[in-house]
Image (cartoon, rainbow, N blue to C red; front, top):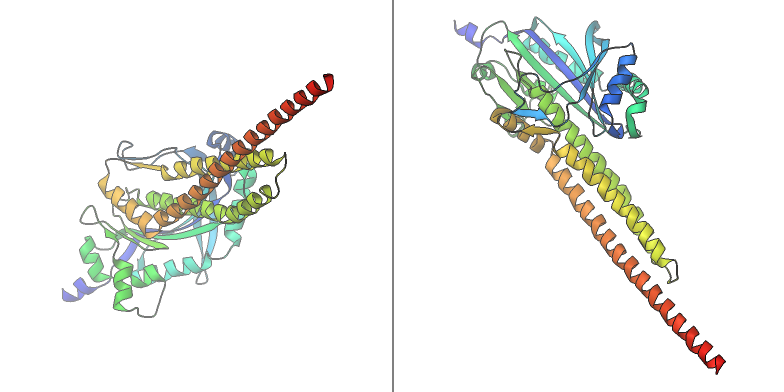
Length: 373
């Protein structure tokens, strides 16, 4: 009996989900993308919200478009396994690619090994590059101001749905060591590192468990009715988008400073026009970034589901979405202040031109009056 209580369980049913996130456009017309994909014979497409959570408790502000990309062969440890590939398009320009590998009848050690093998194999680019190119080609007509998709985020989810013995979350944590699975490390970690790795744990029922880390998550969900994986995906998408706008503003600020310095060189009759043109450009940038970041911030609306809300908030904190978002806000504030200063200078330059014109007209009138007399 003692040996049975200490025996590590066998994973009878579960899956490993590898996620990759790209920013592919300023915006995506999801209705147009769905129509384009429907004309394409490679798979199915549909708009849907969260499956297990009532809409009044948590919902997408704009449900993304889900696309079935068909099967793919994954070779792990000399064995060829079949996985499924899906894509998800968000209206604010993000694309998620997901490769889901089902697992069955694996010892815990083999399950952990397969998770780590999956991470290493999918670190390669080929399988992702082909699917990314196919999706972008098919829905090209729905992409508004398409980008180069060079910014990438990755995440790995190990999900267990059934064990060979019924265990609650506490018993599972006593029977298995999640550290190697969550870290990918085979060498022993320090106690501080272990504690830090395992500190974000969540359970709603006694027999479910979520453990979050920076680049991986473990889900123990015997009922298979949780939307935690979707919530983690949205948090990663928000990180991706905030990083995109942070880098965009990083590139824009030095360019803006150069343009402002160039506009301020010399004082001539074109200064007002240069100031006004640059101010309009900066205003457009602020408006575009503000509109899209608001969409990203509101991608998932949380009201009544306290459990998913806690998981979602912890994921945002773990991924440091708030810090990147704050950096974006600070840079936007600099652009806004520069726009305001340029607008004021443009207004001042126009006023100066008007004053000069009035003085010239008065001088002309005086000269003409003197000539007549």
